[in-house]
Length: 359
Image 1 (cartoon, one colour):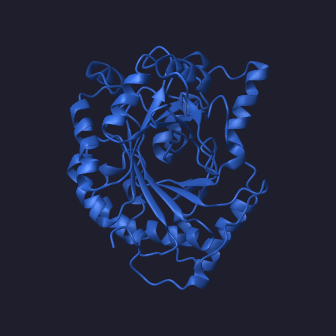
Image 2: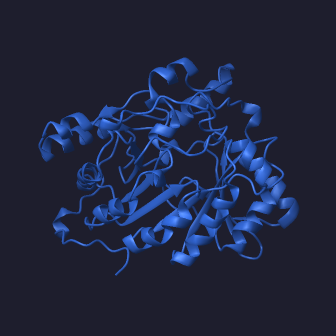
């Protein structure tokens, strides 16, 4: 059956997730397959050139699957493939198949900018990928060009259309909501998503990385989004929360759903069950973390599975990260004025920018 694991893992190998110092379980893993991207979005990586991770350091798909197995041993059941732009990595569908060899992985999703999706959607579906999320911040081609510094809007729309044609039953559209840029398109984006039987998720502009020229006055808050949509749709009903899911979901009167991820104004650190591994094997416990744990070096030196799992176990059980809440607290002292990291530091260490750690 499509999307089902291919091998036989004993039920005894299914483990309860380990917990950090705040009792947060380790359930989800964001796995970056490349730091490269074919767009230059202003809120993510607006510069023309970046310092890229050395090619020889990039993990093979087999190495990624091996690491995923160690995380599964400790309770991870959901994996999201990210980048950069993950579809720039050749044959990502092979990685999906490798990951699905482990029955403990119940869900594999992919986040993409959609530019290359039309050419790969069918093979990803056939490989067993469960869900696709496409980033779509505007429905205006000229505005898209200004945001991304590329003329690829039509290819993104083709990619979105390809998702349903390939057979996927679920599609999410992620929109970074920016005051003064796309705040006049909220209704249009909901109607667009409805046409494709998709769910749009509005994401508050986050002050991660340092090259994105973030400022608090550019943040379109959850409250403002709901106020704007209420003018068009009248009653908007909150949906029951789904555990650690980052999006707060809402229903329109006709049953159409949408989500808001209020990471900036209402952080959800207390429920966060996710960590991320970069394409070269650095493990970050938080999107805001300044440093990570090198899993590539011991893996390539032949460390035993027990050693690798103990590295992960000890890292997570000592975890105290609440990065978004700590950034929020800076507002009280007026210190949350700009980006998280100085631009010169980003040029020295590419891991500090979001395109390297999967956003």
